[in-house]
Image (tube, rainbow, N blue to C red):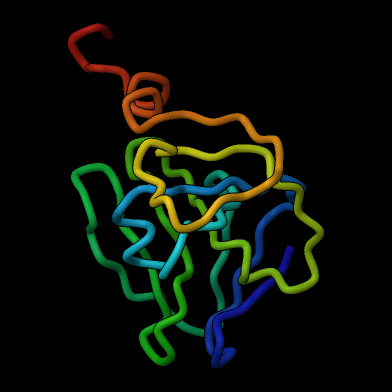
Length: 135
């Protein structure tokens, strides 16, 4: 998959993916203006043409954006080095909506009709960020 920011100064490439998920957490909604349409791309993501600016949004993640036009480029999980990219970067992709996370933070003013797998914020943390004491 290949995509770019709004001004075209940063291009991104990642292996093909067919699924997109939604994140309804308050930070993603504030960052994207609605739920984040997220494509989990793993560690093999390449940026060219320019360097994304980053913002450390939590102890475990940073968010990247184009310093020229402000386009959101990625959510980067630092412990696993996984990049989650906004689906809108890939204008020609044919995605299928499969899951929604932080469903307990979704505001009541929108709904999606797709049948998806849904997780609350607590379930996300339990599944993807186990307590270090249990390791």
